[in-house]
Image 1 (cartoon, helix red, strand yellow):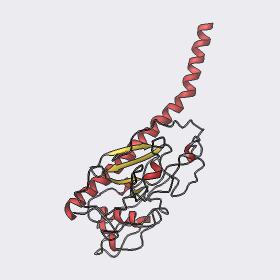
Image 2 (cartoon, helix red, strand yellow):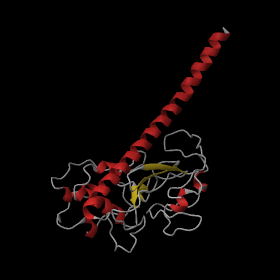
Image 3 (tube, helix red, strand yellow):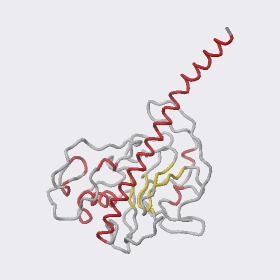
Image 4 (tube, one colour):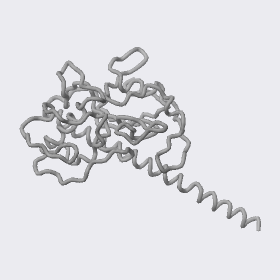
Length: 259
């Protein structure tokens, strides 16, 4: 009888923790797919830079593109589709975010592709010179922020090109800036290598990823992301709607890229 009771208790524990393990595995898989999205975008941008000598950039070469409230990131990434450096706009969306693209058929001319399932009539003007793209903080069809810096094809390999535009915070609502992951940012460098920056990193990634001036103690990411300068919002476990609370493990500090 005691053996049966022990066996029953083990089975009950397995049934209790199996969903949690499956959820953790699914989250890891989505995070990996997100990193692969960023790599594909970086590879397309690298090919563009090899041909054009410069990475996509809206402003003047000495000026920064806009922050998360501007449409510069959507325009810079749409140019990869317009000029044939990217075939699948699905990689614009992180699988762990609330974002999603409307179902549509790809237009015969890639330059006609536009946000919201619409098609463009002006096929002769580069997206970098067009207007009408949605701001990064208002679209659900793009989960990533593109660098604000003007860079040529000789940029250093560890320069940041793209990153998740936000991290999920406790109690975040289903909005375009609700965030992708709940424990950190996926970023990709100019050599198309992806890296995950956890919220427990020191210095806190949210404090320098959006910075545009490098200091003695802080790097500058030059990325148009949601301002998340402190780790306080991530001190509690994040719960997606319809899911049970889970403990958010804060990883050990590591070293920021480029340091």
